[in-house]
Length: 290
Ligand code: 7PJ
Picture 1 (cartoon, rainbow, N blue to C red):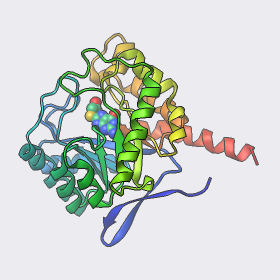
Picture 2: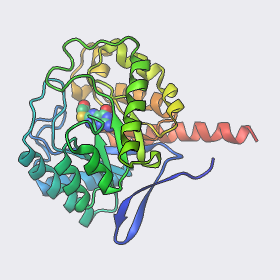
Picture 3: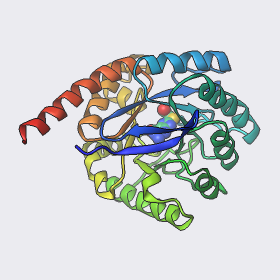
Picture 4: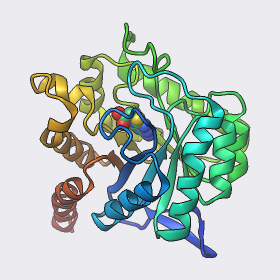
């Protein structure tokens, strides 16, 4: 397979490259006091740095820093609060650890500030639809993940509805790629994410996972976040988030087999092992074709 590298900003004067020909692990670093599965644990820069380092040692090539809880039913966060949570953590990771920092935000000011202190990727669950976000992201020159969400976090799970969940999301993502093009964000900077759990009923989520490979037709790398989500718990007798590891790994393996470039996960060591088996399998198929 030909090498395909994504330039994710700079560190010590060097471009940080992400290899898109394999499945990368993005470790989740929540810096919210209420995040659903590690709530409050990292609401402090030293603790966040410690957890980021642990995930890097376990195999994460990206760390996703998020200061807005977007779990179903979550209340909005103020701009100042999001800034205070996210920016010092991004800066500390950039200074201390050799990794690509993704910033999970929809807020223009956070995009700008996080990029200024070392973020390497913008991960926006609102696909740059908030006021000012498109232009702020364009100016950073960083790659951007455009995710699909129906509705807003506080109400999105009330009655999600689609004509065809797969086609509707294709259409939405294609439209956001065009919106990016209009402000000068080229396709080479974009990744796509169907947004598991964001305004989707159980059946929608599994239709998307079943058809994940169809999103390759949009021609951009895919990022997927399923780790510990409700869609795992619902199939496993409604088990709580801390008992969803095996289900999350199964979903990660399915997504990796379907060619996704980045898996956003909580359990980095376990997912890294699972993905190594996928990589070995996919690589063997390439050899046998020679
Ligand atoms: C996702 C995300 C996801 C991307 C969250 C949670 C909710 N970013 N941020 N994709 N999920 N790109 O982890 O349960 O699925 S926060």
